Amino acid sequence: MLRPDSLLLQLCETGASFYERGYAFGSTGNLSVRDGERIRITPTGKSLKALRPGQLACIDLEARTYGDNQPSKEYPFHLAIYRQRPEVNAVVHLHAPQSVALSCLESLDEAQPLPALTPYYFMRVAPLAVLPYFRPGSSQLAEAVEQAAPHHNGMLLRNHGVICAGVSLSEAADRAEELEATAVIDVGWKRDGLLQGCALALGDEGEAYYEGMMTRGDWARFRVCREGRVVVDEIRSPYDDYVESFYLFQRECADALLNGGTAPQTGAENLRTLESTFAAYASAQEGNLVNVEL
Image 1 (tube, rainbow, N blue to C red):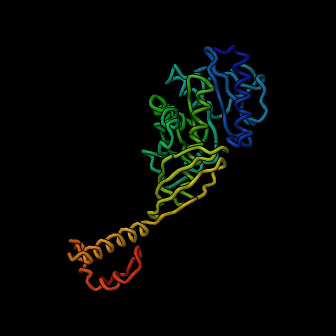
Image 2: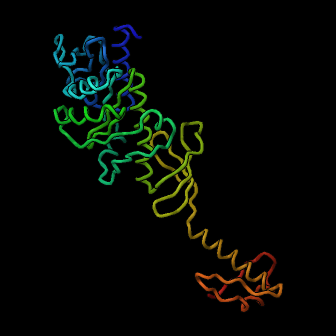
């Protein structure tokens, strides 16, 4: 276990890291840790950019404040989690851009807001709760978080941000980072017309390579860059597969005719036999395909 002074320094450094990476901006976002019987939490109206341990607020589970520093206005849901989860020692709340974008989607499937695209999301975050919008700092938000806390380590707040809890600050931070990383991929797919995919590999510069289906039904091989940009490297339409399959069928029919048989029929489409193509096929160069009149 970290000594209290080291724990507070880690809290400040973690907040600064989130700020530098764009997971929090202005005075948004708040973090807290359990310190014995009390909770150390980032102060109200302060940026996470350059906090010092002496600026952190100190409260207890009954919301009593110790010292002059005032806690973040979001402290009610922090306390709600600590009351419900005795094993939790840290709570992270961020307004990370892609997670917020996800929370604003009208089409969001609240039963499964994010697919488990990686084993890390599955192990660290899922299941992700989706909570309705409530005014930040309100008792209604704290009540909703308190109800979800026993069953969820991660929560997506509609039109607001994310909350992640952990037995340590590192674990809570890891969950928030994994949630944002998965949201980057998922929101990027939706933006660029990709519906689902399967991870193939990671590139040298952190890009993730995938293959999967696009919303209009095309198969695609694509990559998601670190900044969330989706680059499609290859697209194959279902029509391409249909044409290839039909040409193979056509070739089979012509082969049968050359050998004195009858062309196969399809029950569904009842294609006419291809006697009319025999002469054209016989005179064509080996390997060429001929057109068929249906």
